[in-house]
Image (cartoon, rainbow, N blue to C red):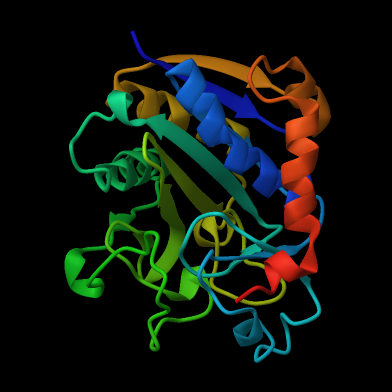
Length: 263
């Protein structure tokens, strides 16, 4: 029996969030089960895709003064602060398909159905909108938009022509790690509208996420085990796989400006 271990982590800074996400691969590999984090951010932050050039951010005056962190996954830059972010690590023996790209469909289709239950019609972006998904791509496409939510890739979740959810992967030898972001409301620094703006009425985001995860678990044929953390470090301390020392070592790398600006 496969398990989907889900953590609802408290808001954290960029380096902490990226360190946790990188270490998810180790947790999934050693436990043999799917591991997922749902989290937010303590301050407005831009996460750069693993292969994006830092200097491209400087050409956007409204973004250049914000806090930056570099993700371990590919794709475009994301404005965090008005979104809910997830990371999921899937051991390859738990993959439900020989095509790891199908993980995008599972995650996004589950959210599409939940948005429909709220009365908001959404659709998965078709292949005609993009020749390829941003996955471990070391060469930056010259015509690619800098911000993730300004791009259109196969499988993105769209409401009308607005992108409200996108994801990118990092593939290891035995584990696939997928990052994604659901735009809850429009970011003050720019970008399109989020779910709240498009619904034009209040909604229960916690309930939306809970129901979404249940759909994901059903689609992946896993038993869901949840843990709602109160702050980042206790989750590390309680882990039997990832130690606090490992976390601090990885976090320090994401704190280093040389790492963020290495491309």
